[in-house]
Length: 111
Length: 114
Image (cartoon, rainbow over all chains, first blue to last red; front, side, top):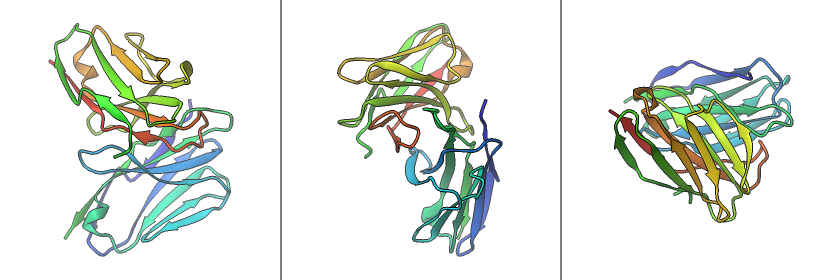
C-alpha cells in the first residue's frame, strides 16, 4: 500500500536555529497535509498543499510541495520552544479517501 | 478545542475484554475517522465513515469494529483485547469525505490493557 516516509524521526534543535523535516512518497500524491502534535496533545492541522511546486508560509514555517508531487518539506526558521512537538505529514492518492500519515518528526529544542 | 469530543479519556482493562470508544464529530461534519497511535508510533488509520456508511478501511484488525449512527456520532469497538492494543485512539472528523478535507482531531482515548 501507499506509504509516506518522513525523515528525520527525531530532530534536536538549538533555540534560534533552523531545521527542515522531509516527507517522501513513492507515488504521486493528490495533496499533502501537515499536522502538529504537541506533547500530550492531539494532531492539529497546519496546512495543505495541492499544486505542484507550491510553497506556503506561516510565520516562521515554510511548507513546500515538490514538482513531482512526491515529496514535501517543512522548514522552520529561528526555532522557539513553542515549536516542540511532533510534525506529521499526510498524503493521499488521487481518488482515494484516506490520508496516509508519515511516522512524524519529533522536535525538541535546547534553550 | 477542535470541537471533536471523545469518551472516555482513559480506559484501563484486562486482556480478553471488550471496550467501546465513543466519538462525537464537530457540528456539521459528516465524516469520522479512527486512528491508533502506539508509543513512539505514527498515526495508523483504522477506518472512516461518511454519513453513516463505511468509506475507507485501513489496517483495522478483525477484532475491531466501528459504526456511525444517524446522529453522526461514532463508536469503535475493540474486543478480545491484547496487551498490544494498548495505545492512544484518536477520532477525527471532516466536513465531507474527500482526502483534501482538513481533519479535526479529538483529544483521544488512552487505552491500557493489563
